[in-house]
Image (tube, rainbow, N blue to C red):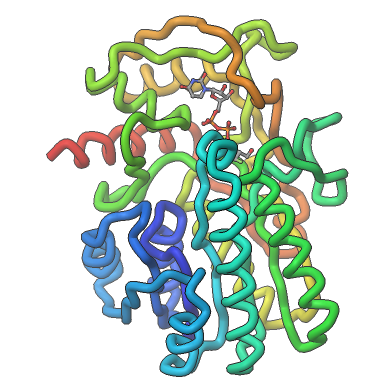
Length: 333
Ligand code: UFG
């Protein structure tokens, strides 16, 4: 198949590109590099030992999106492109809604115009809002606590409505939990601009000495050790979930939603200790106030993806920590 990856140079997009190429698919990457670096493209090619076409494009630009679809005879789209920082979205809601919703509408309009009927969408566990109960199942209530989350929520709705109105369409919504780790080659991984917001890139920079210590946001949650619990998943496992989702979308019409997580919750302190042990490094930390908007526990019931997609996360926490550290050391080179 020939698959367009919008935002394919990003953290999850680049790992998915590698898996799709390895499985024999042709890909086209479209990215405006607003939150990624151009050398990622050559690195994907180096890992996969295959070539593909790149478009430097902003999918919020309807004309440019249409032009790409006119040139490429696509079979499917995996739509990663979008702004993704929770805190930033609270400060810039208009930009977040404009960019994240417009790009989805543009991609869908072009898909309809050029007869492309399969789309896999990057959604997030953030759509579960403040969970009343864990583990989270796909049919549990959804709601959000920030504009970034609402863009995921609204895009899910737009995609569902499109699948209803266009009976030939196949829409797969993937709700990611907390992706960490990197490709084992050490050539691609997460490289946030500035001081990282997320736990694993922050820990990795503390371990290198670039940051003095980790601030743990609260140890008074109702969890086993008081720190927040999340469902961390290796980004390569997550990427493989996209391959399964594409295969599923070729055989099924309508809209379907899947959690992509491990189903296991780790606390912040669990992660600190796992990282220290796996990599034989020290991660100094201090307990500070809770971060506004954080929930105590968020982890998946991943059984639906297992049953219907035939997908299960395979990599364990030691591998996640080792691959994150390996990548972090390569960024420094
Ligand atoms: N944490 C710290 N210190 C830090 C960073 C994080 O203690 O410096 C803690 C958080 O309080 C939380 C855990 O580590 O308990 C994980 O925090 P992350 O920021 O890594 O991830 P979140 O679970 O807050 O958010 C992630 C993604 C969002 C997505 C959400 C879905 O960043 O985009 O998962 O559940 F919406």
